Image (cartoon, rainbow, N blue to C red; front, top):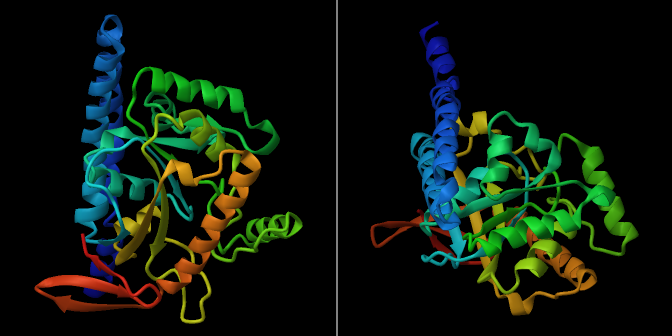
Amino acid sequence: MLLSLVLHTYSMRYVLPAALMMGTAPTYVLAWGAWRLLSALLPARFYREVDDRLYTIYQSMVLFFFENYTGVQVIIYGDLPKHKENVIYLSNHQCTVDWIIADMLAIRQNALGHVRYVLKDGLKWLPLYGWYFSQHGGVYVKRSAKFNEKEMREKLQAQMKAETPMYLVIFPEGTRYNPEIPKVIADSQSFAEKEGLAILKHVLTPRVKATHVAIDTMKDYLDAVYDVTVAYEGTVDHKGQRKLAPSMTEFLCKECPRVHIFIDRLELKDIPEEQMYMRRWLHERFEIKDKDYVSWRIVRCYLKQNEIFLRTAVHGEEALFI
């Protein structure tokens, strides 16, 4: 009975962080609203700077729980600049924790307050968060034929005019990869086959519209594009079959011991400008993600000069545990 009680208590580890994150959200929004009113007569940059600082404070609390409280090991591969940059962040998407992964990288560049998202339109109805994300510079978009290119361009142009630092996060798949919803995966693969594109097994066929509008609109404002691949350890079995990625609750209960994040920093000059060619380029980037996801299921840790390193089975690279 005592063992059952201990296990039950451990499974409730998410209650404290959830209570604090949700409980402080109204206070945060009220503080932000007060500043919005007070700054109405001040230059826009003053509002933006304080808004970014407020966002940093709140998101730092969120990150404390998702990194320190859980004790998860965040393993970063590739070249993540230590300085701030105006970037578009392109990533695969498989669970709600993906939003937090962008924060994990941004805080290491002292750019946490600059994170802004391109989100599907339905999320604007999230209590408090949905409305605030838009106020913080986020962009809501509708899928396929309902996608409003003009509205997105105008929102991004307004941000550039205000000289807003941009760490713009886009999930080109448009929805989460979920092995428990095979129809979504099958439809994605069917579309790729119809269009003569490579069929992807561990990511969905990416949509190019939002990515193209963002890069085309901000090409003279951006420093780079970050191509990010996220792999949650334990989501591929020994046969190479995908398992469900952890939810926020499971993550906070330490159901995921390690997160592998590979970053490829891309120069704007290397990305095709026309949408047709950018679509092919984006699909090729996701082909790489598709192959890399499986390659990370087998890892070997070893000790070197009193620091823990990780060697990947396929790349033979070394990455410091952050």
